[in-house]
Image (cartoon, rainbow, N blue to C red; front, side):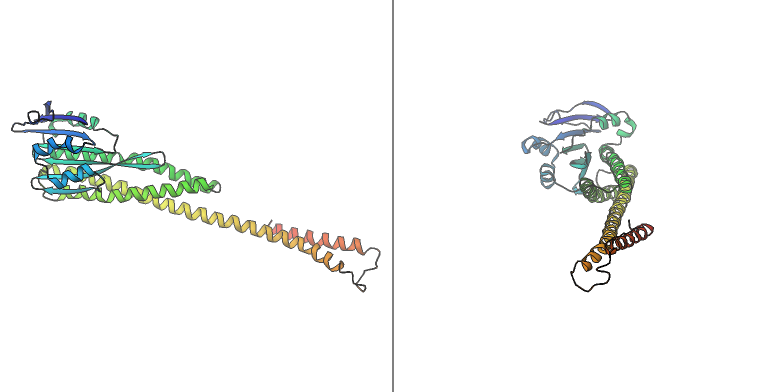
Length: 321
């Protein structure tokens, strides 16, 4: 069975391991068990369902995964879904953690997340005065652990956005860089869609009278909510910067095209002068001004050169060339 850890706690201290059997999960007064699982199957999870009378709808959601963050109440038990996130290269990979919280148990189930709870468990066990509060404090610890992982994602995304902003100002973006901008914006928008429900989960745990959540533990969930709000606010700022990068890149591209158009128009005007003069004198009419003049050829060339030079100087002064 994919059991990461299963231990019984009393008065904030780990007292024994808890094998997933009827005898191993037997608890005395004042004890609770914290079981951590990874991608369990229906059969593997059945022993916990039978022992703690988990609600079938919550069990179905926990095994199927693909849930948005939420809090549901089933009698005296809470079912909480949280979304984990990790940035790999330019993309954000998501996972889920489903948490059953009862008066004497916490069952956490991870789907698609490689970030284990070992360090979290060690941190909580190092603070027995806090862990003594019971399963609701463990729930806070898990949510806080998940939300803490959001900050590095924002930090790395911020570095990428600022890098792209500087590149936009220094030079024109290549097709690959523009594709990277679109990818980054899409990933940040998807991330923000996760943060809204996560903030609502923390707000409900903080403000509502829910089973298994003591009044003195509720303020701890406010910290989780504030953390999610800060991350969401920073993401909003990054999206604004990305929008400005797109606008600046578009303006610079339009400016570049305008410069090219002016240069082409300038050279077309310069080349039009000798073309026009040569075209007129190449019509082979018998009666044309200066047609039989000895210096007519040189005069035509001189006129072409003078007009072309004058146009070139004029375009240079107006910065069209």
